[in-house]
Length: 58
Image (cartoon, one colour):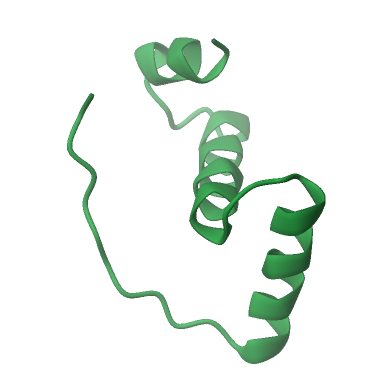
């Protein structure tokens, strides 16, 4: 598995609360939910490599 990079993300409290609720609804961690949101945004914008798209559909 590829090594993941870490970074700090500053989000307003209302947005964070919404992400927390969404993650709980989808039975994901907050980190997992944010990765899913970013991945889908990249996929919809056609800015993701085909190999990453294929791995996410497994």
